[in-house]
Image 1: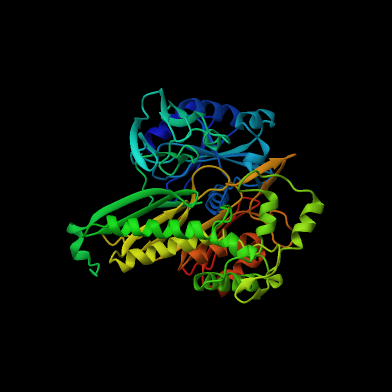
Image 2: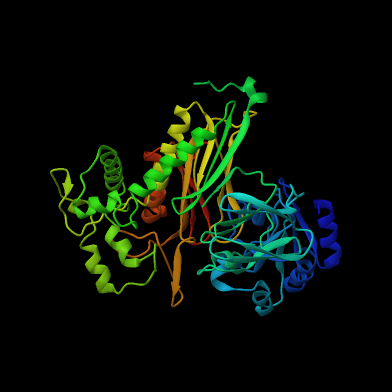
Length: 221
Length: 302
């Protein structure tokens, strides 16, 4: 999906009255406001898929200040930024002007919004631009590339790792480890990935699943 | 030794090998006009040697024998120890190579558990660089355990890089589970693009462009356990005996990976307030993500 398609989708999914275009920024991101973020997110979510939870950084705050939506009235902010990966949306939680670590507070973005009062909310919809090939997942076992999985087709895949079996599921252009023979299941807790910067790693099984099309040479963590 | 020259681009081939070492995935990616296979193999061998020598977990490793007072200090270890002690001093004890006893207590490498306050107090008696005693080139301070795991990975990566360079390979990237060292530009004159992982969710928070240098990250999101709603991670403060608080991740860009690795651990414990001064005095770039999710970038001359 490219930027134009995404904007058309966003505006049509939410209705011209629900979304008001607030600002168009130098980096191409667009900020909307809506009177009912829960509804807006729900409808957008149905079209685009799941949301990522991220903290707001310098750039986010800058965008917010430009759009003039920052303040005690702001509650939920959805951020979409132009990066080179498939369309994704990110969510930041703000309460009384302070960024909250989404992991600590809410397991589900929907449960958060459903509890909040209706009012004037700033919803920034940022999308990640044209895919650089995030349509294939590569499975490596013991450092050797053993399979390429087409993410466009839903399905389940079973592989034999160093410790035992692992099962992966492809759904809506994303892939996740749903079963693993390891103890800690860190790989399963990673959840669905779809972006070239993301990886599912199972050290005991010596399995690494990554998304093809990365423009990065490495990730430091 | 073949000099690297951009006119040779057409003859440059990419060599990429990955091995499971140092408890993680180590990838070596090199561009060379000749077969880089043998050099890469030798580089991996060196990483394996260092991993075994300074393993804190392995019974009978050189480090463990050193800690028991059985083995003598050798030149390589003296160099590492001097580096660690200097950093201990510069960081005012935020980084301390004698944390071994504390690490054993928390069990992060085997079975992590929350120690009782009395246990921590007892373990702290055996932590403190000033308590190290050496006689006839051996350690005689019983119960004090040297642990180099905060920078052994970075050191191993540096040494592997030196071997590649010695064999005439000047354009390479070594990635040991997020500890990264690069040399030379990629074909086409491009810098290596390294992303820093978002410690609070998915994605990347920053992309660093490197041509010669290293980056390493210390974070609270990889090795931790949660008990009664509190997260206990493996980056312990040597003075309190408990995990350092205030930051979620620290990434350091430095000339060598050993420095990047060690400095990242040190700054994580030092905290945000002391990070900027440390970055400036050590001429490094430090990128932090604090408790509030804010990103700080210190020492960035750009």
